[in-house]
Amino acid sequence: MILIHDIFICKPGNASKLAKLFKELMSDNDEFVHVMTDMTGQYNKVVMVTKYDGLTAYEKSWKKYEENTEEMKKMKEKMAGYHEMYLTGSREIYHVW
Image (cartoon, one colour):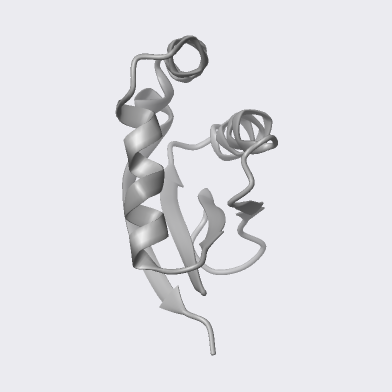
């Protein structure tokens, strides 16, 4: 199994907004684990955690986001402007033993 941490450093005042948006959008996703916000360390950090059986499953999951289904259209509408909420981001992929 692998865990994915999608990490966003938000603009001040946007971390909780972005966390709520991710939680709302991902709540029906089987791979979704949780959204975390910082309590110590770098301020305004949001981490979205997802899990997959392996890298192949992770790669396959991206295919649905490339499709032009009604579900993806609705998600894109809800996500409109989310790039304005953060300054930078990164992704970490962990192998769980």
